[in-house]
Length: 215
Length: 242
Image (cartoon, rainbow over all chains, first blue to last red; front, top):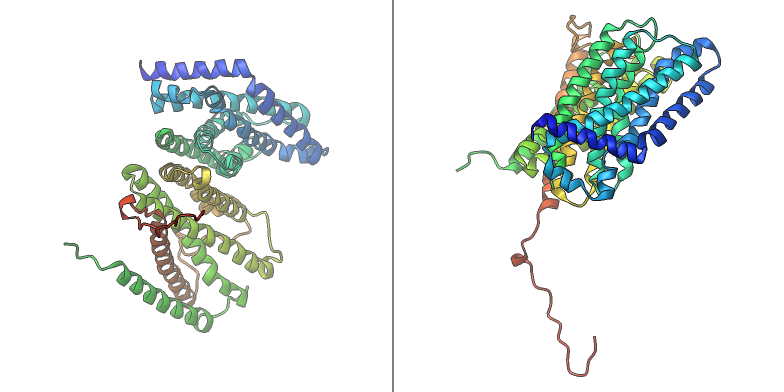
């Protein structure tokens, strides 16, 4: 079985797990939506304040939504006791890539929902570069979420460590994403930061992932 | 036959050098270097604040290198070095934040500002506090070392962000003076005091990491069953119940 076929198989499994459990639909999306609505209430109602905080609200919501998504990375495998079988049937690279694509799709959905809500409720028009930031920033966070999700889930204690590991490490995506989503901000330095962060994090997660799968 | 000096001699030499350099730094910083023209005596906190921040960065670099080395070689000595450096790095980051706050009060007029350098440094502290906590995720020593190595590598991604935050954002925090490509406007005596303090902190940090790694090695030692000392024999006489 080729690498791409393995990746596709893992991704299909992720999709099937989501269809069966509706984990994203019932946890991450409502959390992100509630976050945006409450942030608007807390920061508003002045239009200037909402415009200033819109980008940060979107990315803070995405970052917070990584927590339920990270908890779900291995929950199905651990519940069904299929983690060992999955590890035996697929290589670490394919497993990481398949899980990563599933998490990326989930975070992209969260980003799209929160961005849409911000456009409608905050009445702001994010710059076009915000779309690129959404794609790259969620990719970076997805790699972090996948690696840390597996790391914490395979431990036997201190599962509550997840937020302490994911939230601070997601800081560059939060900062660059928020700046790139704010109208009038010079985009280039933040785009460079986001590209570098995504590339380095993706490479680092890919490299350390096999060590997390060992017995 | 190894010609390397014994560890105790290295520790003694490090202790002596670090002590002497600290003494020299103390004298130059307090008695030779002039007070800052604008900030006055409060600026002397720089001679501890900057070396603490420098040592924290250095420790996190050691965590990165040791974590990579552990994953490549699976030798627990690298894991112990990483843990020792991580603990010192967390302590030095906390020290740099507290001293920065003490320095900021007379200079900026407030204990805390939402400045990118300050916020990203606190985030760095949280990242490495998480790194130290990861070891408690399970009971398996090797698995704990692998998890810690992974977080040690991923956590380092934030270090450049913290360092360059002063350059990227408009900030209240002073930009880099010594490491700046422009010629340093610092008085020579101030630069000497700062240089000595950085060397003293570096040597002291090296010593602390070495000693802590030795202590951690003691925790990792397991006594083989054949070397276990038998406990005292229990003699039960007829008619006695124990």
